[in-house]
Image 1 (cartoon, helix red, strand yellow):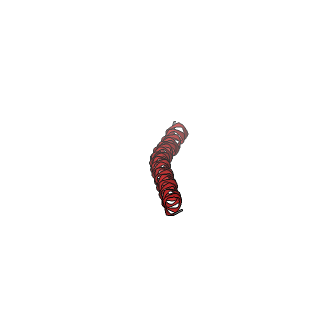
Image 2 (cartoon, helix red, strand yellow):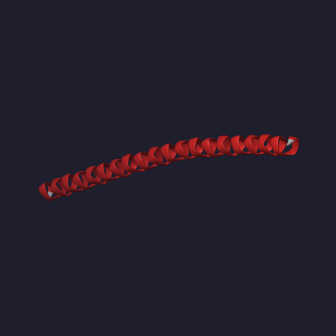
Length: 72
């Protein structure tokens, strides 16, 4: 019986190691996904800033154009 008990223990250890490896891989995949999301958010912030700058430029241009038309 001790041999069977030893094999059961080895099998259980092997299963636990496999579970740990799977959990570590899931954690790594989650970290990669989170990093990708952060990069996407950074790009979104850059895009919003660019749009905001263009809108501000258009407002300024429109104001100057209206002023020029009013002076004609």
